[in-house]
Length: 542
Image (tube, rainbow, N blue to C red; front, side, top):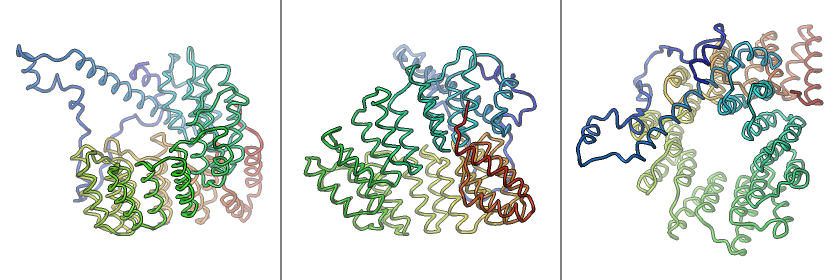
C-alpha cells in the first residue's frame, strides 16, 4: 500500500498530520541546542548522482562503476524508503488507536479510517511494537488486522503480541495464542522464551520453567543448548538466580551440557545479586570444567565488581585481562566509564574513554553516553554538552538515551527550565525523538513540582504521537491528582489505564478508593473494584 493512498484513507478528523511544525522555544547557548540537519543520505545512497567529482570520473574511459555497487546502493535506497514508509504508516495507526482510548472501538475506527487494501505485515509488526504498553489495544488491533483480505500474521507478530500481553499478566490469553500458532506452523523457541521471561518477571519462576518444558512435552519442539541458556538467563535477570542455579545443577550433564556461555550467565546472575562468594564458586567450577575466561567472562566479572562498588577490583581485572592479551571490547570500556563516573572518579573514567578511542574499535553511542553520564554526575554539564557535539561530528549520535541521561541530571540539579527546553528540542532531532521513558521523566518532574497541568500537557503530547504510557507514568500522575483532590481527573486516567488492560498496583487503587469514599463516590470505587477483579479472573477475548 503506497503511503499517499494510505494517508488519503485516514479520516480527515484524525488528530494532527504525521509531520508537525516544531514548537519555537527559547534558545540556549549550549552546543546541545544548536539546530541540526538530519544525516545526509548522500553518503551511501545518492553518491553517484550528487557528487560532481564522481560523476565526472564516471565519464572518463578509465573509470567504471561496478554494477554490483550500483545495485547495492539502489537496494539500500529502496530499503530505506520502505522503512520510512512503514514507520510513518505505523505512526498514523498508533495515533488513531491512542486517540480512541477504548479497545472495544478499535475495529470500527480502523474500518472507517483505512482502505480495504492488503495490509503490509511489516506495518502490522511495527504497530504492535509501538503498542507494547497497551496489551488490550494491541490485541484488538491484532484481531482487526487478521480479518483483512489476504493478510496472515507472522511468528514475529504473534510473539510481539505475546510480549505485550505478558507485560499485563494475561497468561491465559497468551496460551490461547500459542494454541493458535501451533496448527499454523508458527511456533518457535523464541515464543516460549518470551513466555518464560514474562512469567519470571511476574515472580512466577515455577511456571516459567514449566513453560520451557511444555515446549517439548506438549508442542513438540526440542530445546537446544541456546534455549537452556536463555532460560537460565531469564531466571537470573528476574532476580531469581537461586532458582536458575538449581536448574543448572539438576540438569547439568543430563538434559544439557553447559558451555562457557552457561557459566557466564550464572556468573552474571550472582554478580547482579552482589553475592561474590557464589560468584567465585561458579568461576572455580567453570575453570575445573575446562573453560578459561574469555572477554565476555571478564566483562561480566568487571560489571559485577562495579555494581558491588568494588571499583579497584574491576580495574585490576581489566589489567589482568590486558596482561593475557585479551583485548577489551567497547562494552567493557562502557562498564568502567559508567561505574567510575557514578562515584565521581571522573579522571579515571576519562582515561578509559581515551583508551577506548585508541583501541581498534570505533567509539559508539553507548560509550559516549557513559561519558556524558560521568560528566553529568560530576555536575560538569558544559563538558557533557561538548561530548554531545563530538558525537555529532563523529556520526555516532546523539540518541534518545543521550538526552534521557542529560534530562535526569538536569532535574537532579534543579535546572528544570533547561530540562524542559532540552525535551522540546528532542522532537526536532532525527533519532532523538522522545520515548516513553523520556515522557515519564518529564511527567514525573512536573508532578514533583506540583505543576500537574504541565504534566498533563506533556501526557497529551505523548498521546498525540501515538506513544502509550506505562504503569509508572500512570502511577505518578494519578498519585499527584489524588493529592491535589482532583478526583475526577484521577478517575479518568485510572479508567484509561484499565482500558489498556493494566491492573493497578494495590497501593494505587487503595489510595484512590480512600479519596473516592471521602468524596461520597463509593459507587465508582465499587465499579473499579469489579473491573479489576474481572481482569484478574478472566482472560481477554479477541
